[in-house]
Image (cartoon, rainbow, N blue to C red; front, side, top):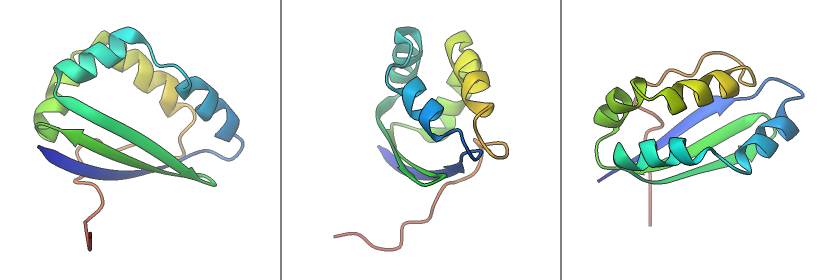
Length: 100
């Protein structure tokens, strides 16, 4: 299992909308994410900065599988309008420096 940390940034003023839209995600999206090997996905927000923690069987394989998911494509379009800049799903994420 891989543990991945990612960072994205919101557009100013999008904080409440982003949180409201994450209150419930579509059941089809969750099913596709679980089928793609996602065990856990958490998002924290600090101002406009978003920090994602993902536990997944294989991150690259998950990305490949979700590219073909209509539910994921719709969700990404919905979320990308709130983000400041494009999220690069091929980025390796944040580098783990220390853990206890």
